[in-house]
Amino acid sequence: MGENTFIITLYPDIAPITCENFEKLVSDGFYDGLTFHRVMDDFMAQGGDPEGTGMGGSKDTIKGEFKSNGVENTLSHQRGVVSMARSMDPNSASSQFFICYTDCSFLDGDYAAFGEVTEGMEVVDDFLKVERIDSGSGEKSSPTSPITMDKVTMISDDEQGHPRVQVVMKDFLK
Image (cartoon, rainbow, N blue to C red; front, side, top):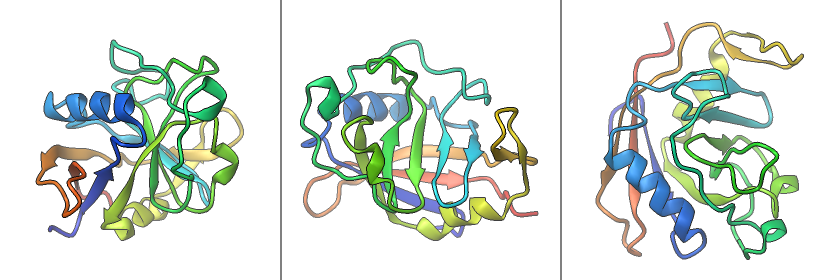
């Protein structure tokens, strides 16, 4: 595995709709060249928006697989967990996702956690080394230089049969 690479293991047994959507986007090459547009200390890194602003997404939205939307989801938002971003509409997730830097269990029940970074979390941690400026909402979360996913691909399943995604980043620490 390369130095700017991390692996996400998916849990379709916990969030089947979300995993199917994510796998399709990965297989279609949707994430190739997209950025992590929002990086927040002690919280998360968010990416997957083709506009790079936090306002865009893929054309299709999916049902939110979390408790407040009538779906049991047992994956807690802990360090390394990957979850879908969405608007206030519980069924608005499309392509944007986030990776938790720390315990974000306050999101449990309201966001669809569907996987976790199982290798290379140090690469995601390095996103925090990129200078960030105010995003316009008062949070210092907008990277001043792009944190870009070069190639995002499905790779072989893990030993338990969980699908895995390899994310190769362009060099973002200059």
